[in-house]
Length: 92
Image (cartoon, rainbow, N blue to C red):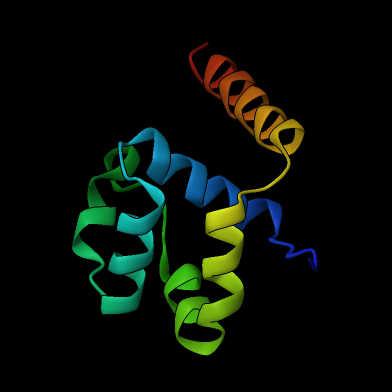
């Protein structure tokens, strides 16, 4: 089983979509179809998902494998923690 790596930004985008309620197969389907509209509602539209759509178009198997296998939980927790910290800093 080979390791599939995503950048921290790609991982954060996927985590934001999941936090919005999208499940893995739903994310994959939306990326495959090129349907960007549902992603406009994620975090009030503050993220640009263009890169994930391009990655899905250029290397769909790698992205889908990464989405299905997820990333190491430790990385996801670190990203959530960093996002929460930034949110707290921005609230001052």
